[in-house]
Image (cartoon, rainbow, N blue to C red; front, side, top):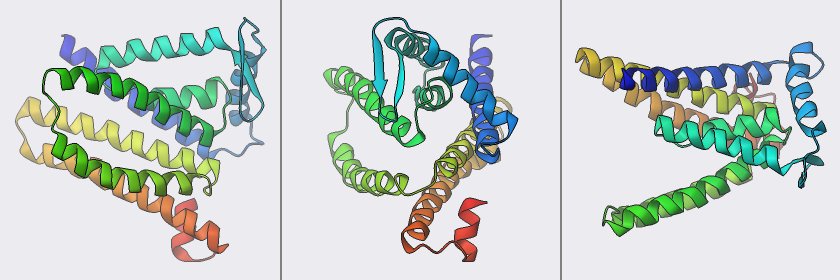
Length: 229
């Protein structure tokens, strides 16, 4: 039953976090629903357990709480066998009240450090393909620069919407892949692959397009309206 529990938990967590983030992105700040996440962040910030840590955006929280969140996410990551980025970013935004852009940057740095340790461990056993790494770095470095620049231009609610879309697509992709493996249906595995890569290309394109629209101060065109809908 272990594999079933892990798979269902992973799909459920992806879907739950994705739906919560999507609801928050579609809810106006003046609505009562968005106030729920704000109240949670305010309650967490009101807990003063030394040492206190101050983040950019005038956010001041207890370092003990931040460490506890990292511990819980680390346990879940180890249990599910996946990175904790999809949990860490919502935890920072909704649990600590950190702005989306800062949450994205912090999440990337945390993944870089933990990923470096994992890469070192694998490299010791010769399980790293350096030629593949070299080519991946060329594309990813350019893509990361474009993505980081675009994130600073795109509205925070739009970032949440794009993030939610990736989580929901990932949840559906994992579910279809597992069903395809269980019942031996190759078409479901193909659907899973299309969902993963299709969502990545669509969301990346939407972020870049939204940034271009913001730079040109032109949100009236059809494509620009699609990125904010």
